[in-house]
Length: 383
Image (cartoon, rainbow, N blue to C red; front, side, top):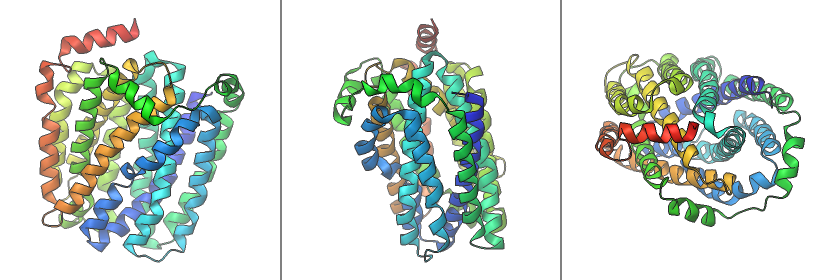
């Protein structure tokens, strides 16, 4: 696999997807209906069911081949958005399979990276997530502007860019399918229940898995209704995407440079930065808060993902990654639905509760997030 070319293809893929999703996000925010906006924000997490059913079979069919199939299917599914009636419930329903395809591709990507070099997981996964965010940085800004010109433009351009990205990724992964075929022909699909049981029984991993669930729940509560808060603060619709482009910029920088930030420093300053960035969205036109939130969240999520990867059992890699993702998505779905219900009274309430959840990471500095313990984990992984 040519990783640099694959990262370029993935940046373009996220560019195309973000153009379509940001236009769809604007359409949802314009309805002003907190329930549908919250449900739309939770769709990625609600992919839990299909993720449970399909992920165990990814490794057996070949991670590289499945990744290409998922990317092609997502490309083609953006075209019918041109013709759908603009009813919020229908748009949410149609966006659901798009989220499922996206999430299954993430599992396939993470499996490829963990299998190739577990010791450099923070660096490589950080570069991958940074590539996605760079593409999203441009796409999030372009989507609403194109929608203002003509409602069909963002979805048409999205499908075209996604097809180009699929073509480039196909060439970047050339030979990967043949290389992995011998190993994966011998791999029998393992149920998510068995993988989940093995993960929960793995004592070193358990506290960091619980911390990841807490952080995911808090982050979902914090961000589910940001679109409503931005519009309520007086941000013009044409500049709606700029705020979230700045958030993506912060996330891209945080992901790319996360491997250069010590674990203890990331967990020491990350929650504070995420809390301050989130609270900044209560102000009009939160230009400074958006990149701060993205940067802090990227540092925390990249290092949590790396620690989980270091401690992950070697048996049943793809089912284990899918089980972790399913747990995280369950926590995120709970946060998104909770935010949609609570936000009917005031969209700021879920954000404030989410900030408290993020700050709740600090007491764990006395245990699993103690600097000495984190340094020992990192030394063991790289040794």
